Image 1 (cartoon, rainbow, N blue to C red):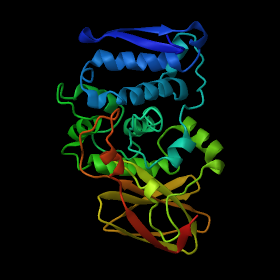
Image 2: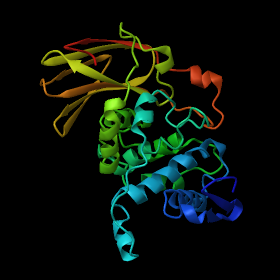
Image 3: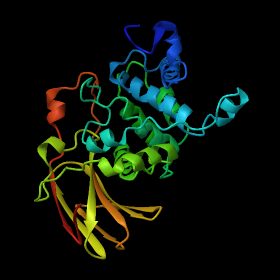
Length: 316
């Protein structure tokens, strides 16, 4: 197995797979991760379209995390005599928050995030914004509503799912990143891991003049999370860019959160001194076809250049 803890073998043409797991790894995250691959294979719709392939890792990590770290499978575990105590989430808050600018699913084996991106699926399935079309069946629908042979990306099938609901992929992606500012995605274990790592996370997206740093400019469906220091009772934002974006002011008051859209480059929100506030800017252009395992230099270079000015706040 080439030093792997487990792997999934397959007969792809008929959708059958089997798992090979080292005995020392049976009580780890990896058996369910590989089972996640088996589930994707059994649905068969993504099997031959390369623009979905790195999403297999995103999906498998989501399935493993959902099994081990949430209450979703509690009844099934109990019925088989397994512990129902949630494991710590597999989420990696430091990597995610310091690299939000990456393409949302980037399969680069050195710098990418194909496994770390699984909270996007958690957000879609938990649907904290109660968007029509999203919810517990979202991942299954992304597999079953996929047009076989289209070589669409999963973003494209998500657009099909959301068609006619009033919510676009761009809106959902923008709001996902807004929820990620404080890990408000309906995942208590992930939120706990975030709180434990938060003091050491470095946010460094903007120059002192409010212009985004070139190396941190958000790429396709990526974002910047910018924590703010409150200096008044009202915060206003003026954002300038020629790119397509979705921006949100996120206000945390105790355990309550507010999400205020930045519209036409302008945003305003009333705050208390005890609040926490972040500006989240996501690059949400028209959908494009891309193979996340073979992203071009041109696509990496295509990022959202913007500048922002604040009143009543400064960058923390």
